[in-house]
Length: 511
Image (tube, rainbow, N blue to C red; front, side, top):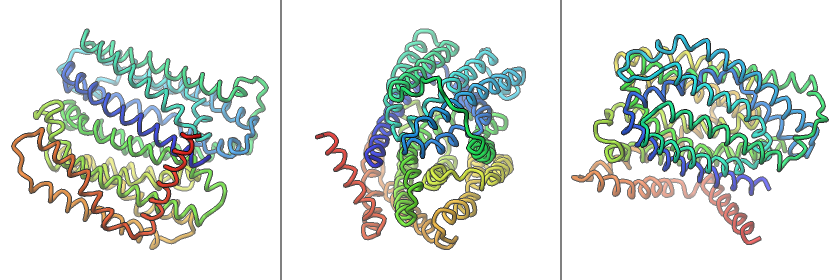
């Protein structure tokens, strides 16, 4: 059942994010052509500020889901009801906190934006972004039981429908009115409908959630959750500063126009990251179930195989981004929206290392390791701000990304080997670095060979360049990976897992 749910989660999440990319590209193109680059930068900036407010969530969602794994596996409905009810109370309080902080920020919004040439009511726009966040927090609590039960594919089905409808209506609104306010109002309305639908599905699948006789949460379990949340608070602050402040630093130091240009690149790389990142988030509950069963030898093999697959996927994606993004953007929205090769290289390196975190993060969340490494995110955040502000003066936009890359090294050089690898597998730093350095060197070699081969081909037509490079990108990196890895234990294990998943999928279909 664990394997079946994992494959369903992966399939529907890939389907969801494939559609997200396709629909998003069309919607983003129309948005830029209708409203322009500064509106695009404003959208990116306010998204980052709302992410800052989400620190108030403190990671309760992750902590609750972690504590739901065991009662879900043992069908302890009373414990499930108690945890979900507690989750509801917490999230109502969080929504109130976000509302209050957001309203306090209203007078200072123009300071974040700086000088702009567009005529827009900044406070009203921010209030609509704030409303979107509050609607999600008020109604999101019942997702937890679906996720803990390894049935995230049910949420993905709803998200696919939401994605299509909201983008379709927003595109119509933009084409007819060219009004940013109406565009945002549609998003808030459909967010409400999406969450109502998910709550309805949860009530139907788990009818006991509607029962009124709910026992109070045990003090010991409450203390356990609060301890994990204390650790997650640091991670939330650190994660926001690392990912969210980039937009603010770019806006303040380089301007909203540069942020708009960068957001087009980030828009594409982020969707690719989400698409493939869902493969790992989809198996988090299964890994958590495996860890609970206490099978360290099998868990270590799964870790090594996931890391091997992680490196392969993100090396392949990095090559594709590096050689395809420029011709794609030229065709998509125009040559005037291109950034320099230096910025692109920094973007790709940052993308690779952010993606490479997926394996360790999956095991970290599945094992509930939140409190032990709580200060690492703060160190990471401080390094990110200091180096980003330093490098931006010397290297411009590329410098902001270089600062983020430097901060990420804290995780790979210290946090992951100590708090995840050693904690879960009782293995030392040398064992960790052997695995990671070998995978990294292989990825660098394949990247350099692939990019060199592709750069030798002359083109006179941008459409032809995109098409031929896309075909070659599909074959060259993957052929090299198979050639260099086909005799490894991880490749054999991955191949075996894929065959088993395919067989189970066919059996389920026939059954």
